[in-house]
Length: 264
Image (cartoon, rainbow, N blue to C red; front, side, top):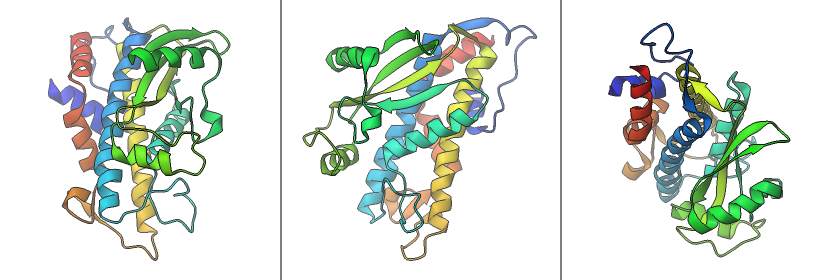
């Protein structure tokens, strides 16, 4: 059973687990709320690992992370929010109609400030930290918002020190914002569900590989050794395969249960 989900995460070029029957992939077996919760949990695991092990651990080794990391004269990696933006950009380029973005009531980038219905629902999220689901009439999209909690010191320090941040007193455990996911259908087939999860997995591969390619182009900064070791061990970074393998090992058991049950 573990092999099913391993194939899902590690085969990030669009492959899906083999169907159990000719009709199993054509039936709507998941509500959109279930699917968006699944991909949200995968995102939580991936972002936490990147934020704590790569950004937090990397900074202790002298590695740099910057919002302008893509500029030619900046030798750094993407901050956690920009890692997520990279994932979202990859998903947007895919054929899967999945939307992803990160918003807040105190965003560093004013364009990410919640307004309207989402601003109202975010107030409730800050109170109870429970997901909010609704149908976005204007866009005709089913929408889910999930609390984005400050779980690493790197997030808190970055936002408190940022010159454009409208809030300077963030603390660990604060709800800093919400990840918002959107999809046009109210239910998905098994195959569509796997495609959504694969599109997210591919997004993490794309942005992480872009970071590793950026490192290869460093001219003045010391390059970390890329292999099977992590920043906790020194000036090292894991390969994309090692990074995703760790994501797989930490990934939600609930997601596996949903997929395995539906594939029978």
